[in-house]
Amino acid sequence: MVGASIQAKLDGQGRLYQQIYRAIKGDILSGHLGHGEKLPSIRTLSADFGVSKSVVQAALECLTADELIHSVHGSGIFVTYNLQTKKQPLKKNAPEQDASVAGKPAPAISNFSKAMEDENPHLIFLQRLRDPKPQYNLEYGTPVASAALRTKWSKAMTLAARLDGEKYAEAAGEISLRTEIARYICKSRGIGCNPEDIIICNGAQQAFDLVSRCLYTDQASVAFEDPGYFNARRTFHANGYKIIPVPVDESGMQIERLLDLSNPNIRLACVTPSHQMPLGSVLSLDRRQMLLAWAARNETVIMEDDYDGEFRFGSRYIPSLKSMDEHDNVIYIGTFSKTIFPSLRLGYIIAPERFRTHLLNAKTVSDLGTSALLQKAAAIFIHTGGFAQNLAATRKAYAQCRNALITSLKQSGRNLKIVDGAAGLHVSVLFPEPISDRIVPLTNALLSRSVSLHDPRDYFFEKEACNMLIFGCTQIDKTDAAESVGLIAEEMARHQLC
Image (cartoon, rainbow, N blue to C red):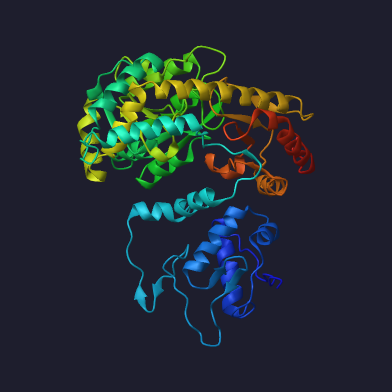
């Protein structure tokens, strides 16, 4: 049975998945798509609308939640709504709500919820998790978990379960893990701190939320790298901050532009100095000193997101910004997502003493503390050498893959500007002009050839300004780098990139 065609067009209002939702919903409610009729496949809808499959899937999730459609495993997606009986669809999960439902006024929602309505990060993240990964996965984000890592972690978990792992942890975190982190962070990142200075949290994402809530005041603003890490930016936006974008270049955030700002409401600046996300540059020494001086002079705070600072290739470690801070104005955020498993959801905050009580209160109210069992297991894993052994192995593997990837990009026959900060788990390629309108056609074409690339547009304050592609180097073997880059180069030529 061939799927029916979609008659309605996108209206250009809001996010793409919202437009597709409205288009298909309109065809169903108008009778163009009748009860029991089969919809086109996700791949076909993706091609017809010129969007990624994840965007189509997000729209279909909303339509399913509204009981307009349903899927049959192995058969396809079918229209549930019957125009003849006029059974009204549910609206509770639609991406946009009507002003009223059945004559009742729409429920009041918080400013936090309103800030999230436009982007709907839940569905975006959900679809990214569900997207099948093809043969050549060059997306950014997920490290490889080796058999050796799984075995050693399982042993640590088993031992932790015997050590009162069923009890609550204090809000600051298990003292055993904080002690191990204090030792490690001093050696690896040059940060001198005590276990009492560390707060364990559920990944860096919770750290962003705790910091943003504790520092918020009326009309607060935050200076943010542009492009910059979108999940951190969304968190500050949801918590009421005005986002002040500051451009980045191959020496990191342009601190000169930050100094030109006259906004007295800037409470903090958020930076990724060791490996700018997503550009990949390293914040230069002179800019680090300028940023620290700016914070001291204006009594503001710097949030240092050191998301992959452990992965430095071909040279010594670059000192963390926190290790250079003489005025105690830097809040340092670290994570185990790239060095162990992202599914652990373990991160940590090293904050100035004047904020520590506020952060601990916020942490307690948020969740009463991170899992004691996972914390004890992580402490055992670090103390017994499993962490150091895994880090050494992954550094070597990622360095080989990264070098092969860069070599293949240089030999691709395209005139590519590669940003090589000799650090991190991805490589960025810059273009002389924005390519936002070509990213979805390019990534869809690559998917049809078993290659997946990360969509970088969300990193940009204005998505239309996107002028880069990001190549992850954790999920692809070094021997596949040339083949995958060759396919990418062919599609870049077809889509007139360089």
